[in-house]
Length: 461
Image (cartoon, rainbow, N blue to C red):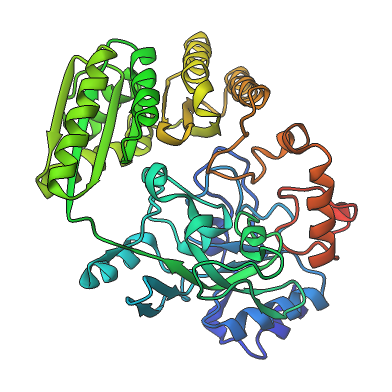
């Protein structure tokens, strides 16, 4: 690594390269329960040219490279199991251009979701993808993040028009353009989004943004059972109501919300909802949704139009993971996800809930059920081997159940290392195509090795 550091130092400033133990430790993990691993060094680029230099040096010395945003990933994506260089993009955090007439914005990868929306608000605009955490936009593109607003606006892949990407050999490409649609060539945006740093490093993103809705109504509805709540969601979607958010939280999770956020919500299966549009249309959508939910046994319905009240409701939902962590000090959180066709959603959530009860481990079921994506959250004592084993077996059961019904092992968290064992079962021969793409773009397997696919020379690094 001395040679690598010396080579990097020919173009990077001294304070852009760190082998400090504390800095390395901060980049050895994400918010998952997966085993940690230290990078040899951490570098902090300030420009595309810096990233190009880093990749050229890494290629010359065959040094693994792991891109890093803010470490909010949940399946071990940024843990450098082959050590090497971690590229921290926190200094590349500039909003480069807001093209309000085109509803586009150009940003560097270290810009966070909240940072962007704070700036866009001045123009009456907002960026829709909301995974809960204040993640970087580069990291969100790398995992094809989604979240609470996906049911209306789509996932990260739907918002990206163009990306500047530094490839494994240091060359720079653009994956798209500014047009709203294109029939020209392979869809490179779709290829790189969700690639988790295994194909290239993102240095700029051009994203679609939207006008802030004229009127927003948030609502909370409680139900006597999990089945009632999920079936109500399915009926709302079938009715064609243009709902912007619909989140499910089970009773155990509502109890955690009440403790952490000092709320007094009924401890029952609950839906958090939001509607965007004009005032008259929203009142009709709200009334129709309420009627549908009452048909499915809804026993409490409360709506909010006040901005502060709406923020309190969604802050409570977004802080759920931290509520569990705060209440179970010393345990690690396994927060995993799957997605299934809407017709399979109710049975899938019921199955996960029943299997969770058998574990006798603290946890809950929650999720963005409007698009068939739900999460299982478990608090694990990592020193208890039997508990860890049971948790992993539970995760595997839920994943297999989803795959058998035409679903996916991850709706939004991504593969990392946590979902890597299920790639062959989900993709079959298509996984070989992915492996060949990886070999073509990164023949020496230096970009985030050990993630998504297995490469023949992986053990040589």
